[in-house]
Length: 212
Image (cartoon, rainbow, N blue to C red; front, side):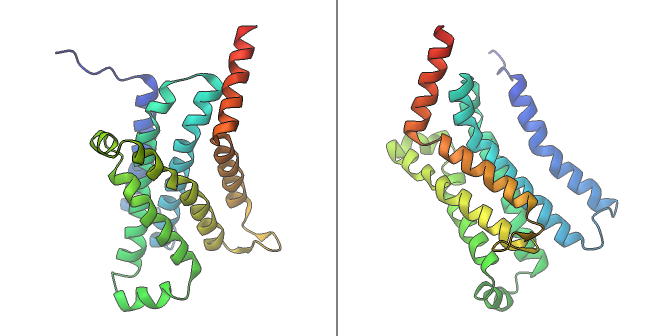
């Protein structure tokens, strides 16, 4: 039996996927997570979740632009790492920060929009993670692609959540909005590039350039 071949891109993705968690654990056990370690864990896992979500979104348009077909095969791994860090983010917030105190959680969920938006994004992400396996791809057929179009809703929700948790004013563009604005711009570009007519135009242009 031949051993499965691991490509350089696969190796890079899996190293990049586990490295932030390893670094987080190292910083935790060496007391290097700032004066508020819980907040630091929430911020770092949340940022990693968003980063991997955008990387998974980038696979299809980059594959169309450069003709690198392997990228489409790595979307699932990147998306799963995004879900891993999103889960750690949510568990840290509700489990460690709130100690699963349901009355306190319910009280704040009803009054803080960043919790509502973040929770909604995570709930929408759950069915995508559950159905990421080949079994569900075959079982759902065309409905699998329809279901995974939820990413078009999830991405803006996560970006909005990011804006809400940073200290600043979106209306007046004041405060620590630099990082959320960069991520929002990247998300907008990637979502536009995934629109079918735009994607077809990019593929046609690539073929035309290669044909010269």
